[in-house]
Image (cartoon, rainbow, N blue to C red; front, side):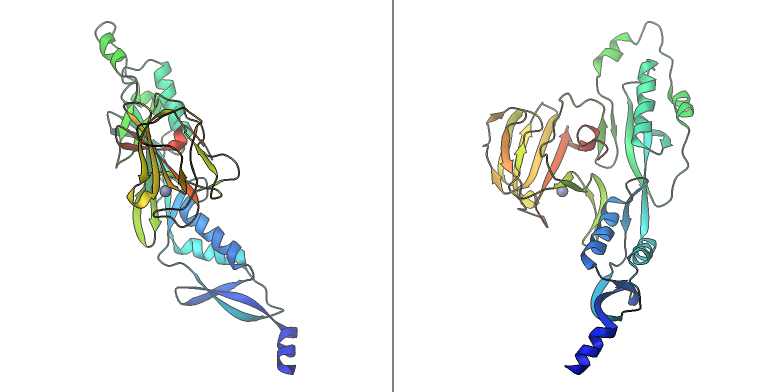
Length: 313
Ligand SMILES: [Zn+2]
């Protein structure tokens, strides 16, 4: 009793944080620190860092810390962040799938494409944007310069027919495409108190690298999932890692996938309207917590939902 009492006066219980076999600091709030680190690994810094590849995650051990010693969550976070390989995101402007120039933000890339359309550049229908990742921050070309580089004067007579034939610019990259106009307008399939926990693109999961084809929106289990666009239900049932899954074909090009549901309120072959309740959020299939996996395919290829809905979130 006496010894315990003395310990409590001069020590308090806390966590030591260990990275690569070395104690790098102490925290009182393991949960908050872990979440901060996990968010950073998965989603980067919200600006140029897209995600981080860590060789090893820190581990935590309970320990007694002298009351006069401070915890240092910020320092721990900085050390963990510095131990990983940062992947910076940037965007390539493409013409007929050939990368022409690189810019830092999606907005800038979109603005460049819009400028070229406004100028009625001959290649306006074959231009695209591809999201890229690199371990170094790239050198980017100034917007005005990119427009200048990509602009092609339209011959007066001959090309008129060709220009009318294609309405969407599609640029292919590793499995993902950018489509300027999906042909349908989307609404958010889940609303309320949600967190986007994973985006389209490369991510590290359980030690391996994968290209995540959808947007993960974490929200309470049981939340209503509404059809982002109307269409015909082509699948309503278990679908491998997607768990209980709904697929709705909105146009001949566009299929939208809703994964990890807890309940499905539609059946295959049924026509649904935009906004109609189709299921409930859950954590079925390959999932670690309640979330909606929201995936859009254009001609079978992954497009980034955030180009159309949950923009900039
Ligand atoms: Zn997912």
